[in-house]
Length: 261
Length: 236
Image (cartoon, each protein chain N blue to C red):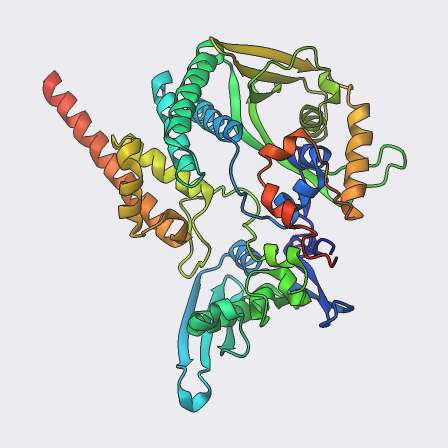
């Protein structure tokens, strides 16, 4: 039994590219079939709450108010409650999420709360090209920059259980997507900063990575390859350790169960 | 309105026979897309009238007339629904389905879209693949649980008659407001449910959520006003 022929999302995004690279089958469940996740992974809930608190803080500043960091922490707690309500989260996990979200928001804003942010959640919508033929790909790249500074730099906020270590940001599908989008939208090269909030056992750490303009050749080729595979409706599973924590584990397990012996 | 904008909301459905063989294709537009296009055309009003209530004498068929006004003019549409031409899941709600279809037909004329609306199709209330008659395919059954795509950038906005469920952005907005009103996690959900008038948050509609947001914002404004007044009194 194959996957149903459903219409693809009209646009692609940094998350879609990364999601497809992780597991094409999970991509199909999330973006094509748009299934309700069976569970929402805690790291995702944590990241969402931290984004909520930090985004709110800078929106308030842009509106001319002087928000208190503890108010942003409270926003993050409210977001945790909103997600936990329908997310099969135990009370212990809820406690941890609240505490972690609070610590991460507080730490980030203490370190970077005075950044000259000029916009929050700024939308972008740019065409994608095949790097070899120059052909415009069917789906446009759409998304939102977490934060943009007055000098035009893009800040992407990430939460992680471990530091990224010595990664090459030019081989990071999300960061390079933002870099490409910022350049296409603005007509000039733009630096991308990844602010990675690392929750270790005893502390919170803020690591910064910068992707220099013009370093996204690998990304262009990879994005075009992924888009072609999606257009060809190639959605095989990518079995591995990540399956145990997958939001669509049961749905994936059900695939093929109706096969005749 | 440009063609690209219209085609953005159009989906292509593959029609299959009982054996799963492809027998054709049809283009359809989503109701949400029609509404969006109508709003771009400055949708001014949508009025509906129940022309025929379902009864045993008429085969339990509901007929509704819709009149839509945009800046371009006034457009009307008729919609009918009975147990034989709707999805089984919506069979108990044929008046509402007839209304949705009537509005969809009026909106299609208003925004100049020739493609049929998904909601006008019998087996495709909100699951495009079921038009493909793919009941034997487990993934098609999964598709019946499809979630809305994209971000909700206007959680405070909902049109009367909007049948969509509460969005994630609306849920978060409600929790932020009740936290602002001093609730903690122990009482937050009860308060959100109370203001929504629902037993469970996921059963609330977008319209109810937008109204709840308005109501809580008024409470917050009153609380801030009272606090300012108290501070002013103390200062005085």
